[in-house]
Length: 55
Ligand code: SF4
Ligand code: SF4
Image (cartoon, rainbow, N blue to C red; front, side, top):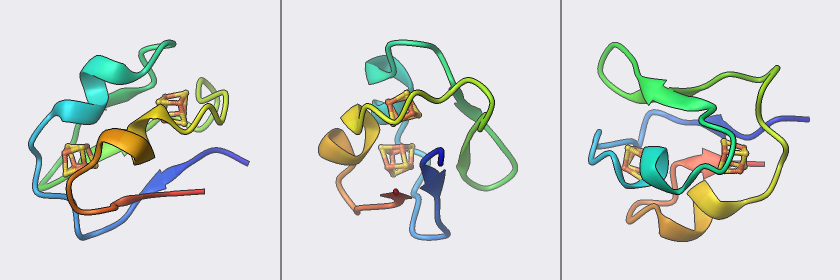
């Protein structure tokens, strides 16, 4: 199971810089995680100011 960024995302970009496998990119109105690349490390969730990445 990959992490998924919910609609709480404010597009701050903090998670993109933290992802060790570059699975996160800017999407339409929020950032998105490529489920085939995500390794479930949880780094995005730990840096997100609004708790948008959910396991
Ligand atoms: Fe990247 Fe880890 Fe977040 Fe998956 S859980 S998107 S690998 S930072
Ligand atoms: Fe969105 Fe959180 Fe990532 Fe910022 S850190 S872009 S609010 S998911």
